[in-house]
Amino acid sequence: MKIKIGKSIITNNSPTYFIADIAANHDGSIKRAKKLIRLCAKAGANAAKFQHFKAETIVSDIGFRKLGKLSHQAKWKKSVYQTYKDASIDFNWTSILKKECKKNNIDFLTSPYDLDYVDQVKKYIDAYKIGSGDITWLEILKKISKKNLPVILATGAASLSEVKRAVKTIYKNNKSLVVMQCNTNYTNSNNNYKYINLNVLKSYKKIFNDKIILGLSDHTFGHSTVLGAVALGARVIEKHFTDNNSRKGPDHAFSMNFKTWSLMVKETRILESAFGDGIKKIESNEKKSSKVQKRGIYATEDIKKNESFRNKVTVLRPVIYNSLTADKFNWLKSKKAKSNIKKGECINLKKVSF
Image 1 (cartoon, helix red, strand yellow):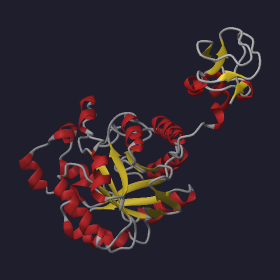
Image 2: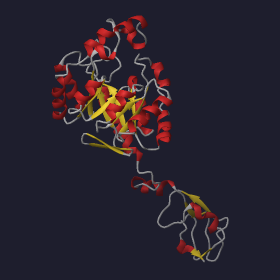
Image 3: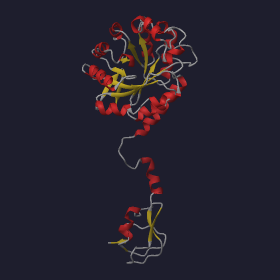
Image 4: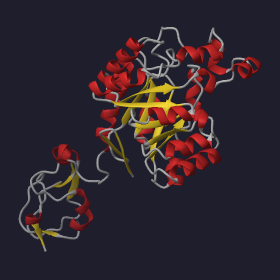
């Protein structure tokens, strides 16, 4: 499987592609948005992602007032509707954000949260991201799938049947698909780790038979889950990004900052370098240690010409010269010495009579 996002080619064996979700962390300032693009690029992100929505087309003020604030929203001081309204970006920002991403050599992505925005952002972005909450909105899935751009689908708070249906809906029109395991609890609780369920990535790989690229959209502290996901085959990682976790706003608290993001990328690159090619062999850096650690065959006493080696040899480290290795020990016991051998000498084929 291979897809292209911007200039990056993503395969099941490529370096991990990191998406910095700036989301609402711009705090209503285009200046801050541009600053965060520069910072995430410097920290090793491959893409900066924003969210295009209008409060009135993504949330119901009446509905949330009746429902009340649940989960992470319980900490919001403003109403859900007002919080979304404050977090929305002016569409006129779009070309500016795109230009800033290009200037910093990273891709520009967004999640459009209404049908009109799907059309409007198309000419600016390198890929569409579909948030977990829209996995059952088949109309927007179909529309995005027909835009001839890669699609990144988050699957938080979804059943397997909903995931299969969404993948089928998108894949019918678009084969450039990333499917991300996700948990949508944004409460910053350390208790959340046990719900991340990274092994779902194994299930996705089996179910979708390598027809997709695996990914992880994560909202936990640190990067333990990221390293685990990459080890399990995820090649696209999305986490929120900010410059200061102490700032007020709905997304800052659970975001990565410049320092933690940089460390995450660094540790991931180290992990990737450790994967290797999957071919078991003596590696070039262990050829010397192989001789030091493996055992050769040595004489435990003087052995005269034509005497049997039985009960007169043992296996010891190291393997020197062309000495026989320990796996020849039983074979050697049935052989005789071709010449006199002193105690402590290593045994090689030249000293064996055939």
